[in-house]
Length: 164
Image 1 (cartoon, rainbow, N blue to C red):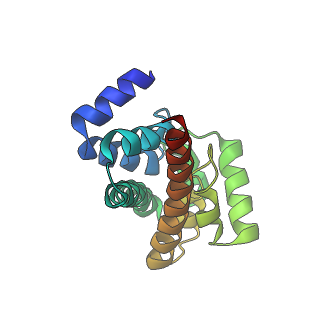
Image 2: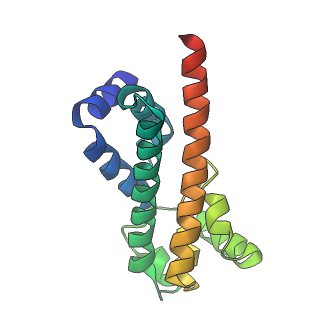
């Protein structure tokens, strides 16, 4: 699988990253391991700090755009409506837990959830249901995505540089 991802990243480049991270943000592309794609992109496409920063910004913006698209699609809908949506394939139990977490910790939980592998972006749904202001949502979403991508990228580049 890694060789296929490497070939896609190197062959298609930035457009591939934009699409994959956008889909991840919409909670559609969760089967595509973006935690692996980001290091591959940094190592395969990056040659300088400017390249690394650009890749991290592009992937963070793409994830945020996907989350914003999902946010807009689900805004002003109740949790029951979201659960009935055939395109939302998240278990009701996980949606309930995310909603409870959001109610308990508030909108800053959007940024926090974007830093946790496995649940990244899930708090977009309760944020949309509870209609937090769009600017606040985008800011929190981008902050969480950027922080996560910086950490993943730094670890990957650090490991890669020690192997050389």
